[in-house]
Length: 422
Image 1 (cartoon, helix red, strand yellow):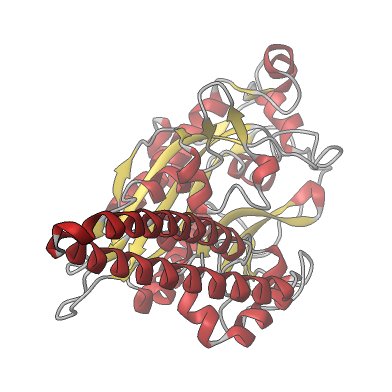
Image 2 (tube, rainbow, N blue to C red):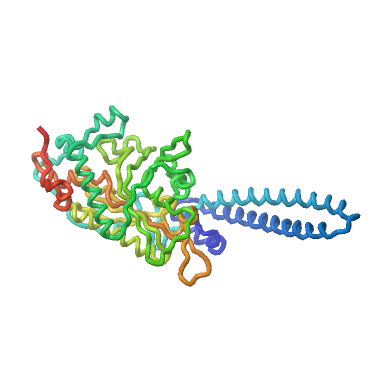
């Protein structure tokens, strides 16, 4: 959630952020009102409790003949303290709920608007051209014996698939390359749990506008994660971190699950929009002052991956209304998909500033500081199943074979070309 002090001191800034997201600024006034009620209720409770403590001493020191009357007064005061405590708890819950409605404050320069109002920051490479009719990734995957959608649907339903033979090897190669790049950059590799408690899912911001995307196991009160960002954010929940040696950087390799609610009729062919996939996710804890520089660093790592895979791409600054509740700024890297004649998102990198960490109570103690401060968190994709789409389509040949990007060959036993199966 946002800093309550910022809400009180700069409500107009918060309203501007809400408006740029396409959200109601009235939520700011409602949160301010709830915060005032909360502080008043807490003050009243603390005053009565102090009065109760002082009265208790008076009763203890009173002469015997006065104690009966004072005890009766003490009981009345105790009832008032109990009622005030209840009122403070109710007000606290109401203020927390009102504050939770307000999304993270967007950073300066983030474009206002929705999904189509992004700003293209740069492009890299030329979209490939062919002297033959290019096949889409599913046709190529079937020719190569790499993707089996039919049996995926038979076993699990729509938007499920098998990666088979070279398809499975290609994904392992991609993920292994990404993991090695992460290790070289100082990230700690992690294989996190993919089921998390509600407070972790809520803390990362996925039970707000994205709740329809999340699978829940009601009987166990656990959620399946759509990204390892969630368990990695919860990893240090309730802790005070030592950032004296620099940011804490993790690379989480996990299977991810998304319901894809509201996407019916979109990308139903192939493996672009599916219910289950694998992903290598970078996650960083750092100081708020260093968060923007860290954001740039994550994007640079993603771009190097796509460049070395020989993919044409663009980097976009995502508009405020398409950020998601936790992100203050998000950069997407979108690769060219030839048969769609369009760029499609392969990576997403978000600076969540202190929003998630405040919810999850993750702090650090700056050198020389008296108290603790909330940390900043960032996340970004370094490899995922969807990349196979762009690789197959970009590097295809007329006979249905696909050239393996050189950087992946060491992870495929030196294999240079994926050949159609007989």
